[in-house]
Image (cartoon, rainbow, N blue to C red):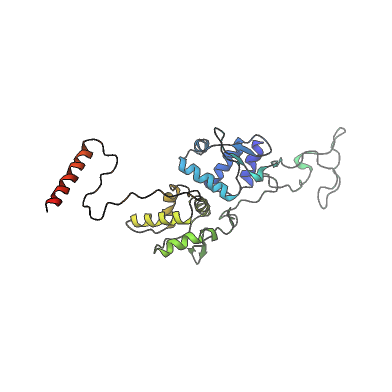
Length: 297
């Protein structure tokens, strides 16, 4: 059910940022143990309260993490059907099993508890002895402890993704394998930004590479670097330009033909568009006058 799917996202999912919000949005819309829900871009925009491009990038990041899967593509008026594989059949923890505590040994040195009255039964109060050790119900049964700088190492949703290794007080960039071709192209063009991206940003880069391709992202980065007045100090500068790029063209797409160039011996620049109206007539008159002058010479 919905609460079970949402509990899985809260306690088991590794995605962060907007990708985690996408998982929560899908989990909130689920109605059965199959952890599926149909949702379109407009619905994601409303639930996340973000723009269309940000919503699409967040969905791509969630798909790239593997914690969200597209079960059926959108068709007609039916939105895309998504599934959260880890939440399929998941049942949230209900806490320690309820029932009276046994009156037999409740500790290494304790014996049976004496009766406290003629009608008393097994003691179930807080004075009956130390309770059995139970799982951490704050984060769900058998859940992992919180991760972060104060609790332990963080594991990225993509293997090999790291925010950077600290070496004697400074961060050293660690480039994931999936991003190596893109970084190499940008470096070969003479652009040397810092690549100490956060794990969530690497997830976004991975989704953008899958959507638009390394070549398109590298070309956009080169254009952005040329427009930057003071140069590009950090690769984070490219993320906004990359999010605005279209998907890579489908295989076999034929590029549009370039406009025909004017004849080599002609000194008349062709007027663009259909030749109708006064402006087009003036261009024709000018071309005829230039041709007459050339004939007299």
